[in-house]
Length: 328
Image 1 (spheres, rainbow, N blue to C red):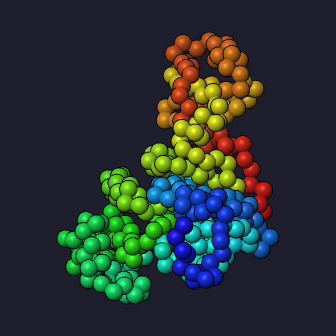
Image 2 (image 1 turned 60 degrees about the vertical axis):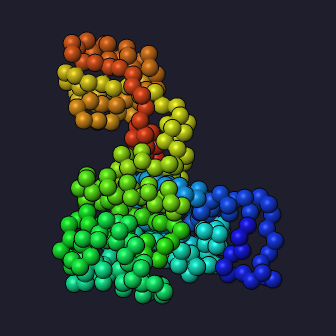
């Protein structure tokens, strides 16, 4: 195991082999993370593990604690409890070292509108005390496809270019970990797709990425997922693992008066959940035979019921509907 920066060779404690293997495998390995604001429990004893070089999606409804968790991981907010490491550093004791090796992109992109793209990047590079500022700026401009925008004022950029500038400012100091808090909110679909291409290129280069998002299509682009609801982790793993472990039996109701009969099914014991999906409805069945009988009993020509493949969105909606916010 590589010697951690905050120890000298003479003071670094000997670690068990199992611990060394964890440090080699995981960029983030934090257990029992909790946070209160007054009497309100925002994060309740959660574990966060992200493999090195992975793109991990951090999903959950608004107010579930995604931003709070990210801010604790990078040392901007102190945790009330928890232990573990981030990039091999103690996440509570070595927050400054973690910040120096982490890029954090907030929900509101941060730059100076009256500075050019190049000047914004030079400013951040100086804050990190980089030796070759000119070389670092040229490298990140090329990496983000911003060379032609280098002398343009940041405030005059398009939404997609502003997004890439914000990411460039997070990467200028060559971090090992990238924490992205809903980075594609408010940008167009083309810019979102280009952004995700960049994210996967960074991960292929060895950077670990933890990204919070509300978009299911973005979740499906992630190697692994963590789903947090009301301060608790409800699911984790790959998309395939999460869907398989849910063991949901999902049916689609469509056709004539589907909305009317979907509402009636909400009161039937054969249906766990009924959710609208475009012009149809997805129904999680408690009793498949009972569901088919209930629809047949409606005796409506043009009303169709068929079993479908469970989607990630089906699982997350089911988990959310089965949860209640007891933190307040």
